[in-house]
Image 1 (cartoon, rainbow, N blue to C red):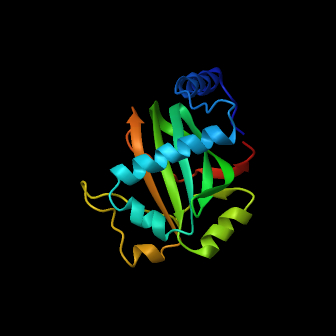
Image 2: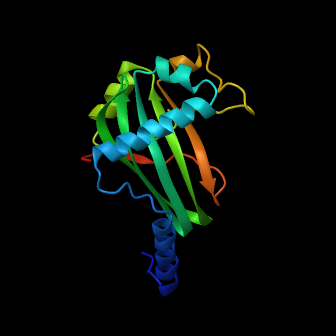
Length: 185
């Protein structure tokens, strides 16, 4: 068993102010506040990510996380809250959390939407006690301003994710290791 040293304590404690400084609070407005942010994120996504509207139209449901804050200094973490929408209506609220350890320093914020393309994928997400992103998620990325690669093959993938609106000092954003849990707004 490894002993927790003063150095480890200082490094992990340094990550907390970075995360707090990013201010991912959604206030206490509850569901209405989360829904407002989700609407804004969807408007941004459909305006800025070519092909996203077509993907949204084909999806059985979408988990929209309008603001994920990620920060780290050795140890890191990320957090955000969002909503699951089916046929344009919010049916549940979720939090997203992740932790990491490694060579990292900085902070960033981004939004992402996970599209459930099949009824089975949507049902599996909704009935889980805590769903984690794994290797079964396909990332749709834009090729220098072009479409995000939506074709008949893409539309048969059960789960597709788009990360957008990145801002901050950490390069890249991945959803691997992210855990989603149903919450009360």
